[in-house]
Amino acid sequence: MHLVCPSCGATNRVSEARVREAPVCGRCATPLMAAEPVNLSDEALPKFIAGTDLPVLVDFWAEWCGPCKAMAPQFASAASQVPDVRFIKVESDYAPTASARYRIRSIPTLIEPEPAPKLGPEPVPRPAAAPPWPAWAGGSSGKLMPRSRARAVIRS
Image (cartoon, rainbow, N blue to C red):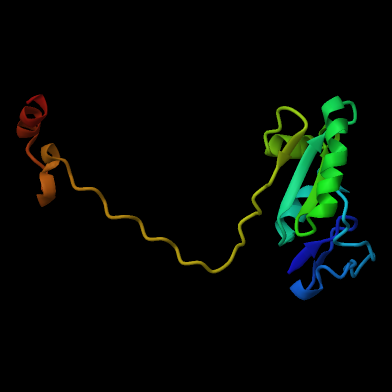
């Protein structure tokens, strides 16, 4: 399983059996599974979401927002009670790119963003069979009607 360090952005590989044993980042020794919300910047959020294999719940908030301040203790409490979800806080005033990307129109807003699709060798889907030609265009024979006959069919 991959976990992105919220401090330095390094991607760490951690076995699923050791996720609950308080793993730390191999680069900066920051706890990877802290039981509290983590503040992320505009630049760090996309890499964190794309590189972390666990579900991510993001709280978009602002320092001046009363409802955001009222919700913060419950968000922190949930982070300590649900260790298999990464709880992230993004201050929307300082993260305009992330706010625009996720279409944040009011705060507080909680989202569970979809991770970026993994690129790899996947088969290219074949297009569905083309629908049959309409009768005025020659029907199923594939041959086009003369223009005068097609006009007659369309008018009727």
